[in-house]
Image (cartoon, rainbow, N blue to C red; front, side, top):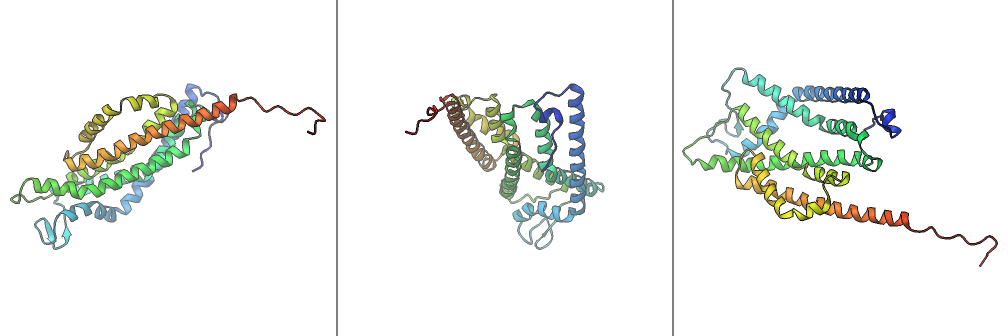
Length: 278
């Protein structure tokens, strides 16, 4: 993805307030165009996207059970005449945001790049690619978890209760689950960026490891809409693994910087005197 840096950034200088605001406006315009394009694409492919989103609910209810119009053909219950339109707008909006996520991350990163040192700027492409892949991985894990969470929640009330989901509330549940897992998978990006910039020292992460475990579980319980133990375990496990991998990243980075520093401080090899052929 090509993006021409402003002259001040390319030259390693600092931007004035007016230049900074101009750059912010440019980044926002590009982001809005990306969101609009994503919205249009998802609006056109709304039927296919809705089928994909309803699939976890179809996995929970068995063919021929109550809540189905026809055997094997699950439906959501519409209670408001305006609900189909609002659902389509919501699906197109959230889907467009998901499609535009790589561009949004790139624009956000390029906006803060002038405030970073040259050594930190070289991680730009890697961070954007990694953040996109992690977010996609979190959303994929969320969709794997949703049928199991729905099964747990529907069975919790007993066999005398029949579940009928409205599109708005069901899609709100799905979006919350996807965002919770997607944002949670950005956890290592925050920790690695903090170590690169010096905001979060690696030794601090190592020292607060026991407290981090408790904090991860608490955050997982807060951000997941279900609150069931299965979903909490599925989310907390990867987050703690990311925490340990971030510490490993910091340790390896410190070793590499130490080797580079030692190489710079090492005396240069002396050149043999002219005419000495020994």
